[in-house]
Image (cartoon, rainbow, N blue to C red; front, side, top):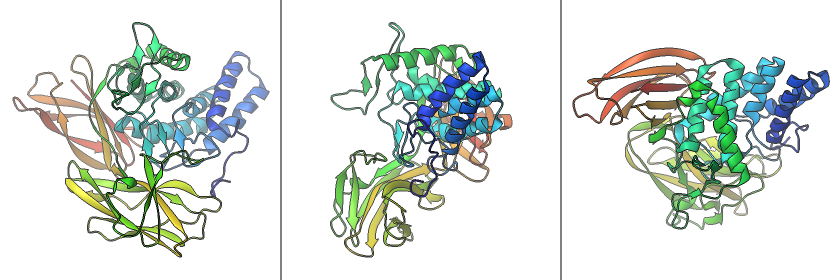
Length: 465
């Protein structure tokens, strides 16, 4: 076990990601030459990968399979073959539970990525946008394509097309990561800056080129996926990360800013995290663009001391303090991302957070990395050629709801009313509703209201022209 979590010990190099590569190779071998011994090996590794899946749809890591047995706090996109491996193994050997495990990751975790910023580089455990790599996009995209083959559900082909559109420019930079003129794949997306410009690394290593070309070739063989490959993000409404180190000065005591580097099990977000002792406190601020409901998460370090020995008190605006027990690890300390509370309503504008540290003695430290404010419904609006509009929304609510969204229609064909084709999916990827909604569009209007139906922890795909 690690931090009280059971870890499969028979994975290749302690890695579910590496084991996924082995499973895919064994499946190819089995299809070419069926052998009971090969099938037994597939079952052994596929069972291990499926067992290393964590999180409810609203709890870190949101149903993803963790990559490495040395951490339950760090997910990375590089080599995330687990979805594809399980879907392929389930299809080849007829084991539906592996396919269901892959679907759980796709319908929970992958839709969270695609409906927010498109692709995560890491969750460490806070979601990190950089550095994005072709090998991260490739694994997610081909995993969805394999799920489409295993289940026949068209939604996975559509999601694969949206995921793969990253290569053609539907990413945080808006720049293609594949050079069609030369066949090269660019190496990755770094944070933008004076020395890096928009952030695209225009080196073209073998890995990036191979992953770009093979992914696009595989997508080209699925016509439904191809319909979504030429999209570009027009608007997004994702989570917001409030870095702990963003405070100007302490409210009390001497909280210290520590360099955010690899901890051995994870990567804190931003440049620093904050370590403090009992009595230390500081204030943070953040802004919200519109009145809405959010789930607040806290990213902090769980200490290896008895429960109740170290804690944090988080107060949002003038609310009641929310107490976080930052102790209780059965072995070593590690960063976690936990819900602070259920959904809270915040008004548009500026808000404040007070963070206070408490401990049984001044010798005990507590550390906080960030707060993550997750909209109850996140969404991303994308547009393509010939007035194509696609909106993907993902719900973090445990009950069905309707979310009203002001939709930009400036890339929509001229019309007096907008016809929205709405596909509403539950948390298992089942199509619950497929209906057409109409919104009147006044002459010269730039937006219309879309009342978006959402299933509990589900997602909704909307299309119009």
